[in-house]
Image 1: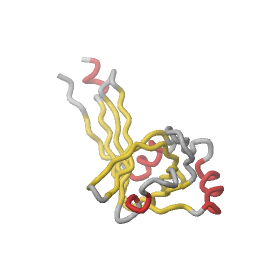
Image 2: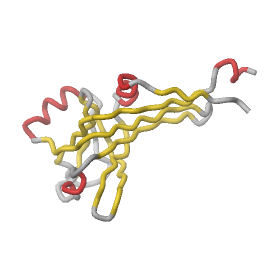
Image 3: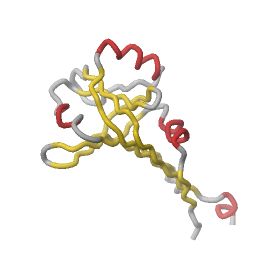
Image 4: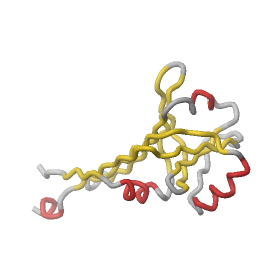
Length: 142
């Protein structure tokens, strides 16, 4: 059996890996307990940005600490990475959205679900951790 290697990732490497956006899980505390919701996201500096509908339970979502998790796996090689961001979330005033869009470039969030997702949310990263799992090159050959 091939031994896998787990590597701790730097904060900079974590943001590099997630910088193209995609799908992540927004984790927050609601009245019924912890919840994790998949959302399309973008990255603006060290802020995670996504959109929600006005009628969402935004008040619950943004109270207290929040987390955001993104991962990527390669089934064929058994390798991948995972990034966990802990911080605070806030609703972004519409006047600040153009600046966020400039920072995100082409990788801005497009919601999956139908509806009007006109509320922008930003998570400011406080603690960023990540790990990668890989198969050493020599072990993969022999």
